[in-house]
Amino acid sequence: MRSLSFLRAFLAIFVLSLVAAPAGAGGGGPFPPRAGQPGSTAVALDDPRIVAWAERMVSVEWGEDLSEEWMAPERALGPASGNVMDVVSLGRGGRITYETALPVIDRAGPDFAVFGNAHNDYFLELAFVEVSSDGENFVRFPTASLTKDPVPAFGSVDPTMVDGFAGKFRVGYAVPFDLADLRGEPGAEYLDFNDVRYIRLVDVVGGEDARFTSLPQSRDSEGRLVYDPFPTIASAGFDLDGIAVFHSELRAEPVPGGITLRWRAQPGASTRILRSTNLREWSVHETLAPANTAEQVWTVSFGEEARVFFGVAAEW
Ligand SMILES: [Ca+2]
Ligand SMILES: [Ca+2]
Image (cartoon, rainbow, N blue to C red; front, side, top):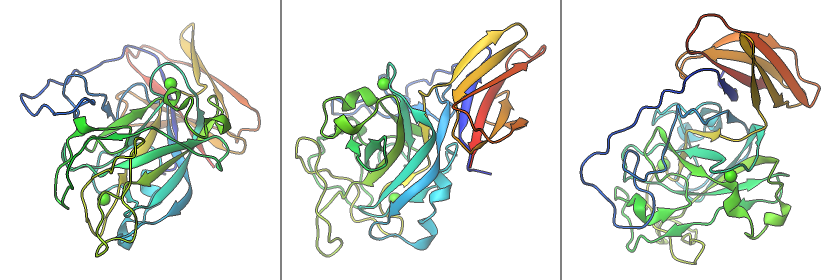
């Protein structure tokens, strides 16, 4: 099943692999560069900060120039795959909303991250990111696009020239978002920063030509026109691989010979405890009955293993 969301509790040593920076290819703008470059904010799909995933598609409005094979919202459920084909495309100007199984909360630093599917570091199809606590009132993350000229269908976007959009890193790497950036933004008064449940992607319309689109070109927070590859066809628009949650109300407490996990349950959702030794391959360790209380508590003992990870998956 792909309709899983993961909570991971980390019981042992984090092994961080530092990616060497390739020579050259620095950008001309002020914003974080492509994955692997010094100063990049790109999030890998096995980043140990990830504790949960978006798991339920709530609504979708398909955009222009989208063929049926890409209208596949289920491909963005659960963990990101890093596979350019395993995505849902929005279509030009399309929008799609997902619910995270566990509410996102605002803690220090980025709180969630959005994985796209760019097949290289510069073919960047962008999307606005909006969040909501009630599913009705959404708040959009501030954006900046300094790209000066139109980008043709197979053209390039310099990632250092765009900020606040999903899609600015290649497949397998997500753009992080910090809820704190929304404080003071229009509509933020409707947001509960300790209970953000809905994340919506709105595709950027990156060009203007009545032969290809009936939609107005998108603008950033400062009113500048936003450019991204235009006009693309068949799988036009942003492509979503998955949405990862960093901050939720999961707590892991070491106990003698094991660990106790506590998290805020989703009423009616069944829960499976998963385990992994590498953060990529997971097996079911134990299945729990559907939750009917707000807080779930689970304790496990583990033996001689030097490095093991546990996750909590919820499924409606
Ligand atoms: Ca935050
Ligand atoms: Ca696309």
